[in-house]
Image 1 (cartoon, one colour):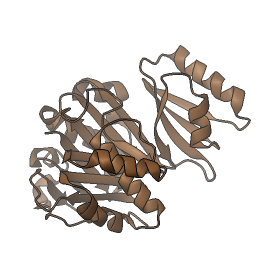
Image 2 (tube, one colour; image 1 turned 120 degrees about the vertical axis):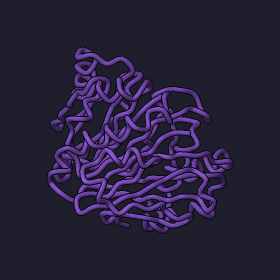
Image 3 (cartoon, one colour; image 1 turned 90 degrees about the horizontal axis):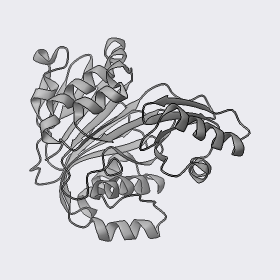
Image 4 (cartoon, helix red, strand yellow; image 1 turned 90 degrees about the vertical axis):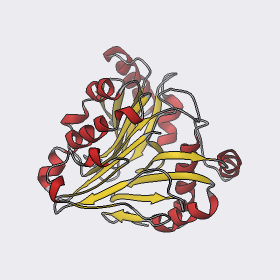
Length: 299
């Protein structure tokens, strides 16, 4: 079943409270996905030449993050800033993602990488997880969220959405893919790394691979219509915006809306109704097999 929400800000007032708005949307979708919740927020760009990694530890404490700092300090000469947020932490500095992965203590994982993206996700009910992360107090230019009902893989933080398989790229998915196992093996041979058996991670990996080969995001999403079997609504985030695609049958629900201050999509209108000015928004159902995008979402 699952619930998807996304919002792109067109005003400073919405950006300052974007985490609050996204959390409010996800709470309306909590019944669609009681197993886990996650958000991808685009905010606080890393300085030029640096990158930002979001880390997750299963049971983090201040002492655990001190051990991560110590491990990083032993292997990197450059100054790295670690900003803990519960079981997550944002690492900012001049470092390569693979180098960081190689020195992290057991159990600590990289869940996103890029200049702007931060991903926070956790198994558990939406209200508790969103509160523990502090999403409502976070500003951002845009963000995506997901509440999950586990049908294709087990309930765990690793299997939760959003999935990030490329720099500043993430995907959330409502639906099910039937050919993900074959496609996963094909992408692995092409060098794409997967950490779970979740079908949605395969869709994210497919997009990252197509983008690395030179496709625009629109072309990569149009490729999904040819190469992915199943039913789906995808919302995909980049540093510059987000895009939405439904499969040609479009049996999974989706609604979109736009005002002068924001563009939003969700699995149900009641999530959009929480946004300021929603009563005056232009509202529509996205058409099957058509790519919608906002904010640039560049090549």
